[in-house]
Amino acid sequence: MTNKQDDLSFRCGHRARLRQKFLDGQLTDTEILELLLTYAIPRRDVYVLAKRLYKKYKNIHNLLSSPVDLLVKNDGIKESTAILFKIVYYLTTLEYKVALDSAPIFYNQEKLENYCKLLLCNKSKEEFHVLYLDAQFKLIEDQLHSTGTVDWTAVYIREIVRHALNLNARGIVLLHNHPTPGTTFSTQDIAITTELEKSCIPLKIKLYDHFLISGDTMYSARNMHFL
Image (tube, rainbow, N blue to C red):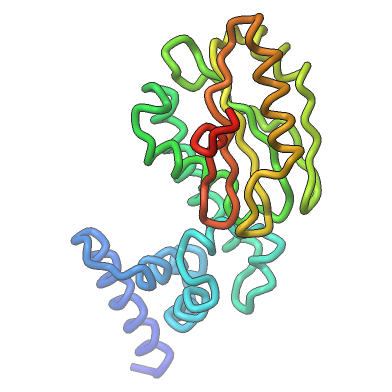
């Protein structure tokens, strides 16, 4: 058997062992990343690449949530691999969104927080989302209201209220991110929250909270007592 055949045989056997360890629930995070890479890069040994990526990004979430244009700057990562990462990331987010659709979103605070973090962690620009809720606090729609710059995004209160009425929503949750970690609500964030709450009161629409994702932390306007 040639060295090339030996190498192919070893890779096939190693990947089969990785798959079995995954089924047995015995993989480390680095091995999970290695297994994922085998589906994107089928003809190469990806062990070293997996270790290098994990060391750089610290955890799988940071890797999967990175933008495609930054992922492809890593040696060994082509667009097809980056897209596979984003598909896995989207499916993870979707799993939490389905849970918010089927039960009151405050029923499981951990799932709500995970969804918000998955949605906005590691984004390079500010995004402003509005979660519209029905009378049972279930999610009707997560609307991407606007996308801005690294430190600003537009918020149109009349549009939020109008859309809530169109959906017959009875509750609203605001959600946005600060790309710079460790930054809490700005004065403008607080003013927007207060103004929207006042606009909703006559319409019997409840503004339940305004969440801010900054780094790996989620801040709550209600918990910080300005809502």
